[in-house]
Image 1 (cartoon, rainbow, N blue to C red):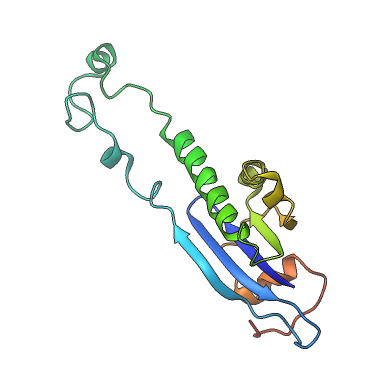
Image 2 (cartoon, rainbow, N blue to C red):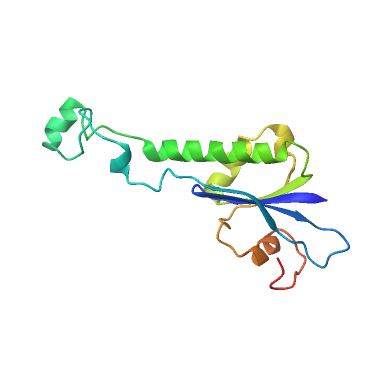
Length: 158
């Protein structure tokens, strides 16, 4: 049975293909997709400016507030969170919709795990066999499967 193992956070997405059959001693993980989300990596001042197109910090706080300048509230972090979870769900949908993979293991930090799964269509969400509410993006490949299975795989085989 061919499956995907997906690890993600709001900055990095990694998808591995693996097949666990009775002929191999341990499954081999092969990277099939990955991407870095660029938002959140840059400085906020590079993405935002005041209404005159200048940099923040000009004038006093009181004058900026009254004129709608740099004191204007921006929910940029909430927007990045929303955009990131949507992008991850779309990428998962694209990988699982074509029928190439029969199932999926999914790991994402607890604060985004359920949110991403809720954005998937029902038929795609049903392919997600196991979830781990942890950020495993930087976990070594050899350790990833240990989070999803009770089997013991030899160290160093990926």
